[in-house]
Length: 85
Image 1: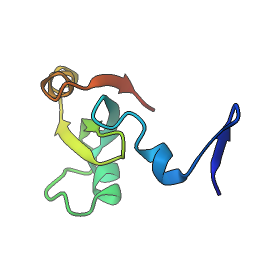
Image 2: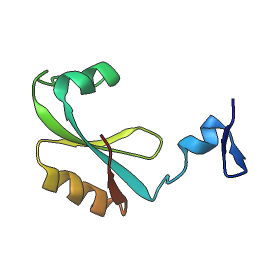
Image 3: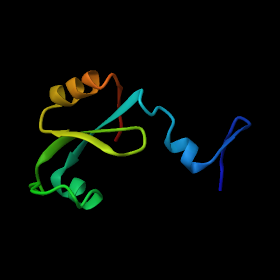
């Protein structure tokens, strides 16, 4: 089903790529949540509180225990950081 807003119609795939290469999404997440969402990431403590930086398409770019490091990662990748909950 296409996404429709204010007369603009786009597919889910097109919507997923908005901001690609320009926006980085920051989220505080536990190691357990991250492992569940991305099983290929090894060795995360389930209760660890982490900061994740995601690309616009949802791919994880950086995982750290410091917000300042996540913000620096966004800057290094020339991404505008946006907080998500």
